[in-house]
Length: 409
Image 1 (cartoon, rainbow, N blue to C red):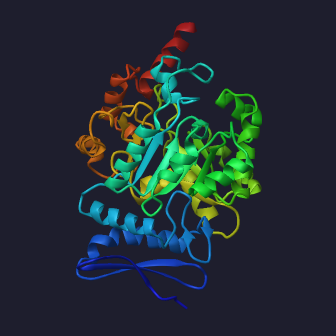
Image 2 (tube, rainbow, N blue to C red):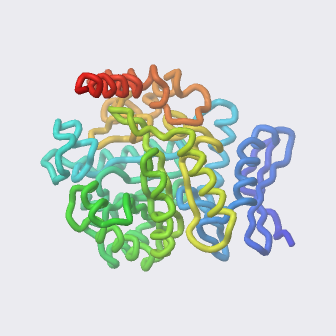
Image 3 (tube, helix red, strand yellow):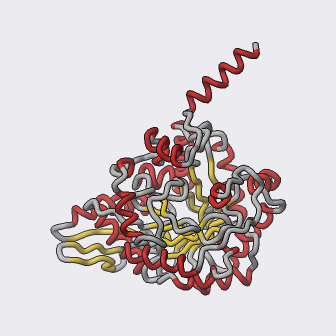
């Protein structure tokens, strides 16, 4: 039995409603002479809602993913409005990620010329609360529906609760990463009270020593696990995230079992973007394994849902960088996403909306892509040259290795 439809978006010529059956299945429907504008987005969402388990279901809402606003909600209404604009080629940065601390921030380490060293707290001044609030205000004005505090451990910012509370929850949901370095159940409860929706905790291996080594901090694994437990106890949505490259896809099942044991709402798999060396890019075989794993887990009840940017950005909506996503660094520079260290402007010098226009003029962001922009050779070269990176490709590296091997014979 279908419950009464609830209108979530209305404008002349187009009405979009949401209905929910007794099994908590959500469906979206459009009516009116302009319904064709919304159909691409609605068809993708309806297929996922029908075929996949949600991250969480309450009496009032369904959370299709920890990365999305609940349905129905005022924020989801804004998401639909954004998607209607995007359908007419007026792209909106629906997700805006903001760096709020320099501590343990890999981007700051690179800027200060100490990349590759063990992470440590360093001296550059933290971004001011005014700069961060300005970024939030401008992002919401442009239509953002997800504000994510990211890079390093954002909870080390002394104003983090104030910043979370500052976001208008009728316009955007708030997410934050944490390494768990300065966390407790009491702090988790304060974050919940301030309006945090989702706590994101990355775990790179089921082996504590491996995770600690990747973090460069003894005990980092135990702190991450504790952070997950605190977040769940406080009633937050919690996702355990990991980054996988072609060499680590085989660890996916073990990491999922850890996520299941901990009881998180979602296990998030992020495909590693091409690196300076470019030797661990995700290939077709790895993506196939992720796709099969995603479908297997999400088609069965029980256990955490799986989120995969390989599928969400690839098959569903296309790569988000420069199309549905922008990123603000500690210095106010604006990048297309956190993985593309290329500034198109600074919010301390010009409006975010004007910077977004410059990003949108970049050819690589014009058409839908099923892989990250850094897989485009010409754009990767542009980014590498801007950062004075080595721009050899994989074949160059393989050829060099082979030549060295032959010379040693």
